[in-house]
Amino acid sequence: MEGGAYGAGKAGGAFDPHTLVRQPHTILRVVSWVFSIVVFGSIVNEGYLNSPAEGEEFCIYNRNASACSYGVAVGVLAFLTCLLYLALDVYFPQISSVKDRKKAVLSDIGVSAFWAFLWFVGFCYLANQWQVSKPKDNPLNEGTDAARAAIAFSFFSIFTWTEGSLDDERAEEVKTNLEEPSEGPREIPADQSRPGSWGWGGGAGKFAHCQS
Image 1 (cartoon, rainbow, N blue to C red):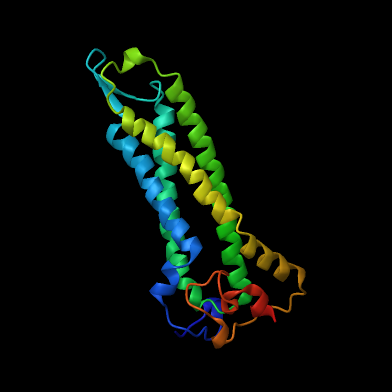
Image 2 (cartoon, one colour):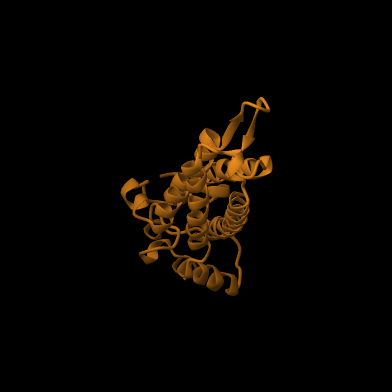
């Protein structure tokens, strides 16, 4: 492919979907994407109950509208974030500048850590509100499975996003490059740019090799 990022030269290597889907970080991103759909979908579809006596809907989590709003907001935003970084995964092989690749990986690590924190807060918040919910508010146990599913997948999401932020190989590569003297933006030779590679697997996509 022609065209590099920020005016960089030819990156080399065509996009290979088979290589992309085998990358661990891509798999984690897709799993996180599915989990986010389960969370906000469960709350939107069954997280609000009707109260004939009051004539209005209320949140299944202890009648706390903020709990439902938080779950939906985090789920939707995580869904969009996953799509954004999946698009970046596809575009990544065209980035020939070592500096720009480093920025992309650092941003991925930082965003993953941030979302792991938000999911941790969401899990604790929803679990607490569910625990203190009053049985009289939902005598027919409507939407209880969906409420539990949102809590469970919020918990699972903590680990999928944490794994993305704590990848030892990526962190070591970034650390190595940050410690080396900077000589300005450098291009990655065509034979060292592998499609879909963010630093896992072969040395072609690694920062350490890019700097050598």
